[in-house]
Image 1 (tube, helix red, strand yellow):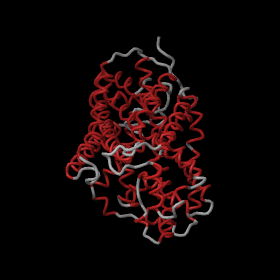
Image 2 (image 1 turned 180 degrees about the vertical axis):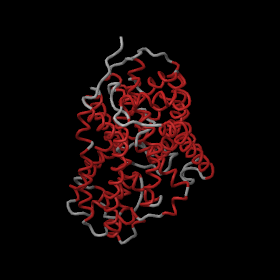
Image 3 (image 1 turned 90 degrees about the vertical axis):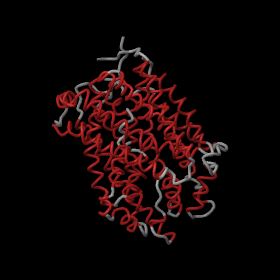
Image 4 (image 1 turned 60 degrees about the vertical axis):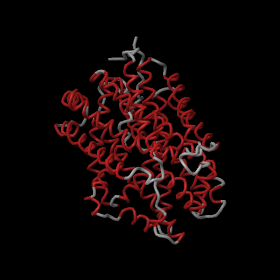
Length: 501
């Protein structure tokens, strides 16, 4: 007998959860950095084009699959086209699972910094960025200095990692009813906190220079292929496309629920938050630049350096620094936890559907496994391996999933068949343009991005010589190859539970 499928308590609960899964740590640091590096205000043009030509069409596709077939990504794709399609779903969950292993480590650092914010140990050695960097890389991460030297482990990072996985387990173990309650707090809270930081930030000396740096358009960048590749990459990364989690979330909706309008709401909410976050980030960076008497360009850094080095440096110079630091890292945690548990829920849904396990057993098993794998990223070399794996999962893994989904649905299952279902249940009717995007424009754009990225990697390997070739092969292509092998094995295992039709 088919197991009972969880249901969202309401449509707003689903939309909030979907928005929470899309809005994550990348909105706070990645979008502002990518925007500036690729034309400033002019970057909004390719970004919106990418959002409309890839983001929205693929989100509609993933929502529709989960809602129509009432299963996770592998199960829904299996219903649509048998085992070859099912393998795409397992590949998506493999990419999502791998990302969750190191994403939880980033969350762990945020828990540590929240605890540290009241004493600000990063400011103990002084107020310079170098002092904070030394505190972060040497003392907290116990960085070994090279990818080839594993070194010891960072106990603060392990403690934060454990707290993260315990929080994820507590949120998802009871299914989407608890998730729906949690997101009602964790989705609006970071917006409120960042608004408070922005209000404080724009009153600081130098803030306007930071905002000018963020928004000044460089239209010459629009003829650079890298700018358009960056736009498509940002949209894919930010909207959580290719993880399998959106399909899983949609499978918890009744079959007669809206599809297209939900996709538009989620997509534009995510884009709007990313753009808004840039104002908070660069107002503070402008202040930091003036405080140290350097151009904004010399303090702008992306990724973990921005979050755990540059921003704490700026905060340490402000009045009421402990309060602002605590607010900032609470915002980081509430941004990150929604994305983290949604990725895990996507994997858990696939495992539940395949083997008919209970939510608690599937959740507990994966969370323990995720914690153990995550320990690799808490070693002295963990930061470097995290950087390599993250680059390949986002640059290639997610993009390839999106490409294969378009080919599978557009050329084999049939876009018209799925579009007819979408229009039957949705408030907003989609037309032939969606077929055009899914069959032609979106896969061509993604394929172009993948091929161009591969060519660039051959011309100049990632890391500009900092990483040996064997490390890039192992942490990059090796991990992707392992995911494909596991996906193939899981596809060959018969379904123990057919699920609800």
